[in-house]
Image (cartoon, rainbow, N blue to C red; front, top):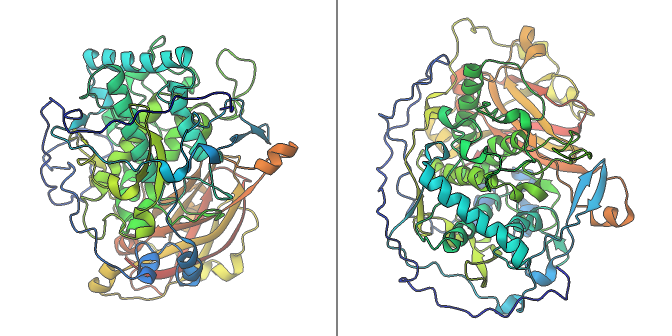
Amino acid sequence: MGSTNTLPLPTYKSLSSSSSSFTNSYFIAKPSQLFLQRRRRCQSFKVSCNSNNSTGEHDKNLEANLDRRNLLLGLGGLYGVANLAPLAASATPIRAPDGYTCCQATTTCDEKTVVLKDNCCPPPIPLNYETIPCYKLPTMTKLRIRSPAQNADEEYIDKYNKAISKMKELDKTEPFNPLGFKQQAHIHCAYCNGAYKVGDKVLQVHNSWLFFPFHRWYLYFYERILGTLIDDPTFALPYWNWDHPNGMLLPPMFDREGSSLYDENRNQSHRKGTIIDLGYFGDEVETTTDQLKCNNLTLMYRQMVTNAPCPLLFFGSPYSLGNNIETPGTIENIPHIPVHIWTGTVAGTPLPNDKKKSCGEDMGNFYSAGLDPVFYCHHANVDRMWNIWKTIGGKRKDIIHPDWRNSEFFFYDENKNPYRVKIQDCLDSKKMGYDYAEMCTPWRDFKPKLKRATTRKANPSSVPSSSEVFPIAKLDKPISFSITRPATARTQDDKNEKEEMLTFNNIKYDNTKYIRFDVYLNMDKDTVMNCDNINVIEFAGSYTSLPHVHLHKAAARDEPAHQNTSVNFQLAITELLEDIGLENEESITVTLCPKKFGEITSIACADIQLADC
């Protein structure tokens, strides 16, 4: 906002337990039972809830003292031994930004970087960084319960509409009120499109271990603001239950034209009960409804279980300001990004009631995503995955490293008071005053199985070695290569301690475009050219990217916005090697299948390493 727009100096109020107590009763989740691994048939989606898949008690032993070297390598091992030293030196706690460090955000349209017309910065803060107080969670007596959106009744929908309407009214009556709808949407824009700087470095909360905690705090205050506007402290956001077949569509409450929950800048072909594709990358895939649901459940299993056995694989890589190497966590990668792309308008398509073409709005681009009320419903389910992931077992626990736990963000609370918040204070949603209504997670049963007909293994000697293939100059067609494993015949104890990681290093692509490529292990050469079935046992995972760009200098000179983002992409393959029967093989065949041609400009190399978990 301009310097002439001022906000009255807040009157700080104590957050007493009496002002934050809730009157509703709440459901106490039961501990998770044994993890189910049998696969249900794709033809039927009659989900049984006999297995309790609710979120259980959060880990109580998060303060163990681990050596820094072991942590950066061990909790996911995202960068391997070769990159350990740079990370150990640069991953430090992120200081919360303040209003004085915020500037105009940028986005990309027609292949040029442009400065956003709407300033994403918060109202001016009449305090400097040191005097912004740290937020203390109020004492909670009752929990707000977030429920699946598809189960919402009319009474709840009316209440939600009223809350959003009041938030939008503030845009007209008090345009610089931090509780207003646009101001709340601008929070995401500022943190995600290059408006905030800490020191001289641009802050970005995506594609790293900041992703989950930032969005948890964001929704926490957003939810409390809505409850305050309708004088209902029990109000809880719904969650878009896209991981369950019954929730794999745009929630009906958001698809009513004229409602405050409706956003016209959505993909109009994905309305009215259309089944979502959790691997969506901008192109429609012809398939049956049942097959699409089956694909979605398989993706969920891979992202929550197979590919996320270690904390840094689930959360994403350690973050350092100014670091141009990104490594998103499994859920941020898929389904988080595909849901954004599927819901919003795809870049290049006409906007509703407008002659101009979309630059990827509203859910279709980071800068505008918060302008769609369904954004918060989507991220409520993303947040729910954090709780569920910690109940699966193994090493699936919160990161304990102080660099993560002591990182901070800045928000206004429901009383318009500015606060700094720490990641360490958001690890338990119940302590924050909310939990999720229990819902079945049928993806737990969708571990792909080796079919009897698929008994032939790909022969690594019949394909070129990784040294012959890399560096890949352009990924515009399926590419197969053989790669040597670091060890064979591993013991179960060794597997429990170390995860086998397949890493693609320094992937560069134009980050103004949609990106996706799939990875398969030991795919038969006769099916390589048609590698579009993710329900086969050979499917290892996918990489996706939502368009985003932060080029302040280029924007000032109106230069082309093409920018090569550098990304490391890792897949945990220990479980997969067991399932395919490759544990004793010295080398395996890897196949890369691009789904968006011509946009991956290069991949430096690939390797397999054992990382402490």
